[in-house]
Length: 457
Ligand SMILES: NC(=O)c1ccc[n+]([C@@H]2O[C@H](COP(=O)([O-])OP(=O)(O)OC[C@H]3O[C@@H](n4cnc5c(N)ncnc54)[C@H](O)[C@@H]3O)[C@@H](O)[C@H]2O)c1
Image 1 (cartoon, rainbow, N blue to C red):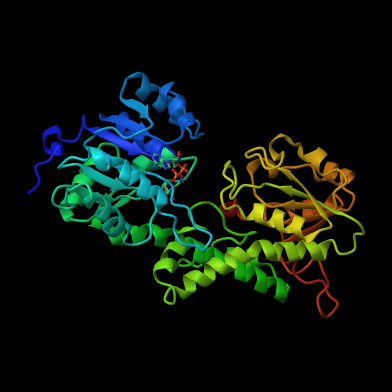
Image 2 (image 1 turned 180 degrees about the vertical axis):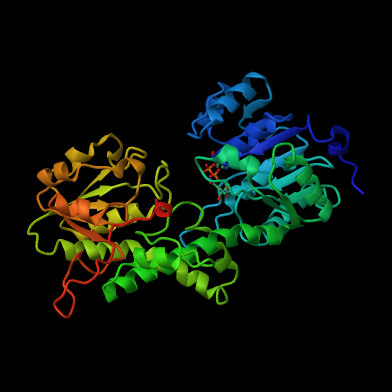
């Protein structure tokens, strides 16, 4: 049986070392520090360490600045470029994807190696980074063994993933339920007890590989669901009906929850995590891989619609793209499908692209004003439904555009409002123009383009 420092310290007042102070590591470090522990935050970025030493954070997250400022000024959170001896090490480094779509585990490798010289018997080592199944048991534990200490006997080791939503991280760190996977049951229990200083959600204990798979399958479920919606959008365009209307009504079924189509899936989680399963189980993870490929194909699909819409324009076709980030109301460009769409448009030749996005700077997008950007454009492409794009003056837009064409990839605008301003409205997933005549020459029931229910907003 391990005799551990945690026994003596009974929950609070422990020394913790959080390695990687990004979107996950810094809020986690701040939560532990504001709930009774002494935390060293470690990052390889000198810029982050300097900012944190002054009690400042570069991450824009509600409430985080105040907690960081308070914990640093109280001496409960300090910043260092190398790990310091601690009772528990919490690893929150990136796990990006390699060009061959395998997980890049080199950051985990370096983070674990950085603690080997200071590890002591009874320490906890916790991996938070999203990882392929088996990473904790195989990669992390085999590296930890190089310290001479044996994981499970001398060290408590667990995988403890995050489910937080950027923009609500501090709240969700507290209220979300967690799955904690230990390499032994005792490891999982120790880690659960550590997190119980601030987590109010349920904490479920399992083995580390099951916990890794839970994390991956949560995002994979969403990726597959979005791929289904994307496929439905393409089918509905071919059938001349409106996929958004189909989804809205299908979701009235008490056990159906279809997601929404769009120009693709981005971000560092949903667009990446399913590949970590495919990597380990290629050949078996067939639907997961297909869904990934469908979502990856959506920028190309939107590109083809743009080409069709602008086929009659001679000379350079000018496209104004609204929103570049991977999802609305965030500043994150990682794996953004809109960035890929823009690159494809440019590679096509004969297109010029101007972007507007006050959240993130992509080729000047941040400082650009919408009504100036659309001047002389042939297409206004709504790529991300940032809240500031919800109410725009379509008449002002029409006055400035060289060709009155709008492509809405998010079902964010009302067809009637856009068309009343004299612009032609096109919606991803809608194969029929509004009020088009039916086959018998009569006027059919309008197919509900650009009409949203409150739950879709
Ligand atoms: N951001 C999210 O919403 C979210 C949600 C769930 C899971 N995750 C997962 O959490 C992990 C971290 O994600 P993130 O968004 O915080 O990443 P991030 O890129 O924001 O931050 C990672 C930080 O780690 C630092 N770092 C890299 N190598 C280091 C090393 N050897 N030692 C010390 N610091 C090092 C980097 O400088 C960076 O500041 C990833 O595996 C990610 O998939 C993220």
